[in-house]
Length: 274
Image 1 (cartoon, one colour):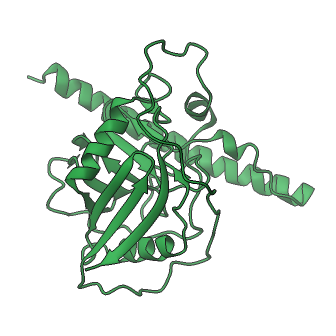
Image 2: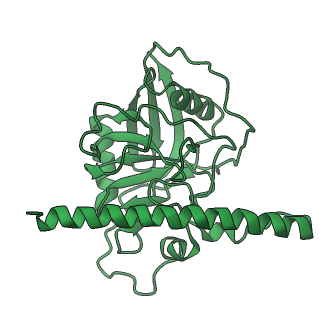
């Protein structure tokens, strides 16, 4: 006998997978449309791209859903929780891009830690270097270039799956470093029963294999997902408190999927070797 909770989770997973398919197709069409416009006008039209937001755990999205996450709803909840975070540090994100994945420069046998100094508090992440060397090496490279500095975490989900998504300098869910990464560590022992446990940090992707870039998600509550997203780190206890504070403030749409109400900006990302 399937319980109501099990059925609810199954429906949430099915909805998520349908969204993935729609968003992947929307991204393909958007790229084709933009390439045609660019060839006619000689410029890249980016205004329409700004209307997109990321799909949960994805680095693309469709216009309809983005409108709900980027534009303040007309019926703003009267009981909106106060912003628990401070103002961002001075500065703005740099939209940097590279043509190919950086050469391996980390010591794959060493331990590395990622620190996200955010407006809501510091989030420490122990990286799984040996299990996800390409991913960790990329983050080491990007952090060293200041790629994540002054970027906002653009998406929070509070129903079905429970994640905060970050890593896009554009803040729209469409940004990336210009190169893609291979999937790694998909058989991590922590991923049991198609569940990414609370405290996991994993890569977002387009729904296709080997399409990770710079966007990643932090899991603040056990979330049932297929093992398709590279798990490459574990959040420390202090970081989990920060995540739970962000989640408690809710998201902008009231539908369980939108921009965080909290002002979540990564002021500085640093990686240290120990």
